[in-house]
Image (cartoon, rainbow, N blue to C red; front, top):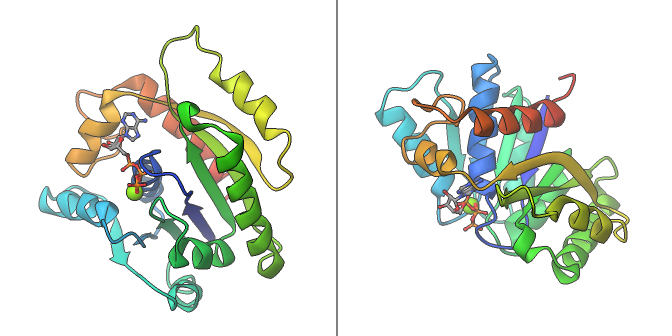
Length: 216
Ligand SMILES: Nc1ncnc2c1ncn2[C@@H]1O[C@H](COP(=O)(O)OP(=O)(O)OP(=O)(O)O)[C@@H](O)[C@H]1O
Ligand SMILES: [Mg+2]
């Protein structure tokens, strides 16, 4: 059983993209996974709906959940699914805070251009507060939508900034800005399933997947 949250306060960092791709890979691995969409924008739900409409197998079950009851709901759903993947919208919301208390791991995608002390400080605080109720929670920042230009040293910069935050670790995975993510999302697919595919996108996503679900 694993309860994974993809969250963070900044909008448009790739949270939904990572949540749906990881859910699809989990389903492809034969797991009974539930995607929980806690964002009223409902982009994860639209993705799952497009997937259903196209008849893509395996199916990825998705529900929407808003408001205070989320924590209790997650606890209950955890008994019925092998894995829960929660997509939280890009705000400091009730849902984000509730999900932080219910999750085992949180991955916080951050775009290198938005990689600032303020953002990290806010997330470090939220994680610290959540750990007061949920001591097993572990939090990683994952670089998302990074430039494909090899001369940009975003990873090194991120690592040095993150060293100051006690409750956040830097994921070794790096997700880059690639058209394949947008194309796949449009059709309710993961980058793994996209045809013609993008092997670099598929490989970096698999690396993140292995890290997140290591040994489970
Ligand atoms: N790695 C990527 N490469 C290219 N495009 C991406 C990537 N990740 C996300 N995008 C695109 O960027 C936009 C925002 O992504 P996404 O919806 O996943 O972000 P989000 O963090 O969930 O946003 P919100 O905070 O609004 O929920 C989408 O159009 C998506 O297709
Ligand atoms: Mg989103």
